[in-house]
View 1: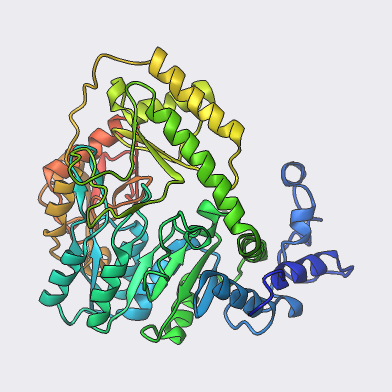
View 2 (view 1 turned 60 degrees about the vertical axis):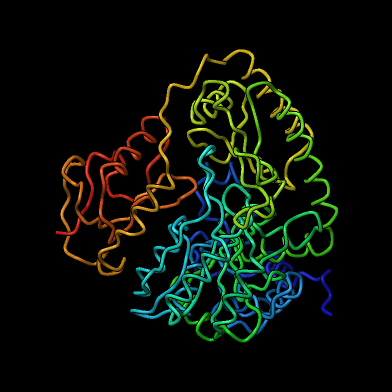
Length: 495
């Protein structure tokens, strides 16, 4: 057992930041001496004294033998992994590296159609061929959940030569599928299960949270420590267990997608966040769950509002208890506001501008909030009060919006892949007015963001229903990312 009280990387950074010396190395601001004063006024000088490079005492991220290696070993033990890598380019680079390490050009990988755009980037970089599965879908709430064990088994029977299975656990809404069953099925084919667990870094630290991906049998999982725990933005981890993953290939893949000048501020924040959770995780998560349950209970009692929760399969407004929805992260709060005659985008704007309550993201019917160890009882009080006033003062008679069936769109697109994402991405392309792109092959990634689930990707046929959906999301106040023209007046297509 390692001593989880230790923070080797954080301690080394602190010592080097305080050591008197004359710097003739990067970064150019020389421990804050060259920082422009307005930035120093905002952040203070201490952060710049610790903004250091790969000094002898600080180790090297790509060939760790000292304090980084020690910090990663501590993290591996805390999270139940056999090996852990620190990531400074977010979970995006971890997902990309996972695909690069397991798939080459022409290799098949099974994954859900509602993956994050980082997985599509991994397909483009690796040249892998996606075998898309449609996730289970709630047509009433218009929310896609997880892929099911049966879908994975069917895909593997049809594609026994697949090199890996990748899934999302939990979804952006906090929904967890039957990952243990998926792992068992995947391992029958002796291939690895890769998990995008960006929003589940806290699962390992409390019994009332869903089972962590590693505990459920995943071979590799990527976690955004910054999204739900105490690390700085972009700071993530990649964990591996078992012998189905070549760890050397992971290290080499990460060298392709991570900066060669990693921020030690981010790395040290990972070391600190690991210690915080290893020593105090259960207490912190107990408090977080208590706050989340208070918010869930009070908001669900407000007329016109409902919250996403685990329910019996017989309930038509939710698929809780089904293979695609076996658990819910109770710290993720999704509130359905369509009963107030408002779209999620409208309600989100009102809450933010009138009540200073800012959500994680909004969609046509819902607003989703992340409740974490950084929230306070006063935050929950303000959240509940905001919704109480919203329901009383901003309610309309009905919601005059036709809600498209996103699942049907993704299903259609998933079966309309004419080129591999890599082939289409690097193909000669042209930019056309939106109205002229129907039935053409898309050459870019296009997705409403957040949550960053592509509605179109390179290699897919563009259809009019998809164009209508994107325009409606934009008209309702959503944002379209990934495409060259963010105004969505034009799209890039294969020439």
